[in-house]
Length: 149
Image (cartoon, rainbow, N blue to C red; front, top):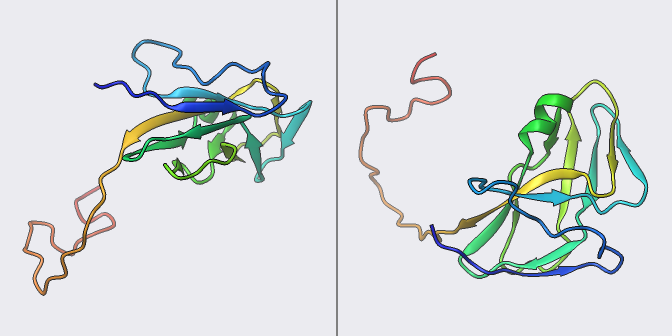
C-alpha cells in the first residue's frame, strides 16, 4: 500500500466540520460529513444532493469514489444513488453526495452526520484495439445468469 497526499479546501462556513477521516487503521474509506444547515429530510423513495463542504484536488492517475456507508444502508435503507460516484482528477467543485432513501421512513440528515465514504483508487486508462476476433472462453456470449444460480 502506498500513501498519497491530496490537497483539500473547506468551503467558507464549514470550518466546524472535521476533514474526512479513516475511522480505523484497516478502513478503506474516509467518512464524508453532511455540511447542511439545520436538518434536511429525504422522504421514502426520494433523493437529495447533500454537500460535504469540501473541495479536493485528486492527483492525476487517481480518482475518489463516493460510496454508501453499510450501516446507513442496513439500518435506514440509505444508499448513494450513483454509487460509486466519481470525483475525477480535474474536478474542483464541492464534493456532494446523492443520497437515495430506499427505506420506508423519512430520513433526517443533520450537520456533521456521516453520510458516505470516500475511497481513493488508482486509474488505468485503456486504449481500444479493434479486432475481428476476440478469442473464445468457456463462457463466451453467456450472460445474465449463464454461470448458474
